[in-house]
Length: 289
Image 1: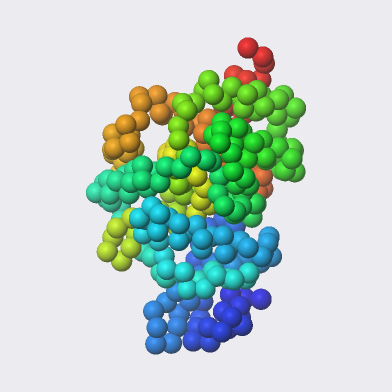
Image 2 (image 1 turned 90 degrees about the horizontal axis):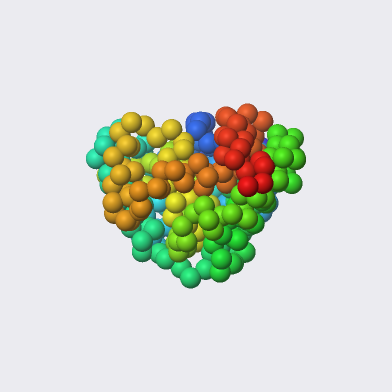
């Protein structure tokens, strides 16, 4: 069933056409033209992985907006088959925009600290469920629900050998030695550069969240590792200044980004180099030290 047919079945008969758009990796998406109303953004899965995918995404958008003060698209409809949102703009290519984004991200992370790691329900990262069971220990939460949870996925099993998997387990055991002990805060959870957009006024806005209370550097690592444009360079230094990051933060980015590399490897035939990135990070842990 096409997106247009799904919209009509959901009662949005005013939609006259849907123009496909690219950029996302997991779902079908398009801009829907409506009679006597502004266009809307719509997406759906050819085969939804569960009934709660879009409800969870709508909840995440609301959390970012209401708890973190982040601009997000308005949710017009969220059901099993469709998510319909107000249309945002492509982000402007300017250093000033990225500096404003640094302030937005710092405010989100600094204003939403939480005593526990997790979320009040599971949500979704692409087509895979993100487990958010509450835990008081951030290292244990990250190890169990953000790293080791991918090891039983068929594509991960095929790409990583036994020594790689053992190395990941050793890395998880050593997380308290490798990473600083940080508090949990509200994180976007899937903050690659394509999920940073702009409002009609040109201010930063976010889409496609997989929220949880987690370390702030999970978001930072994702932006850092997904080819942000040259004009974003100042954003990282400004964010570090605003949040009082220590001078070693850059060295931690590849380790923290392991979570996203594993998620990509688990879901897509073309992993865009994720397997190689994983092996590089795991290399020092392939033998006992």
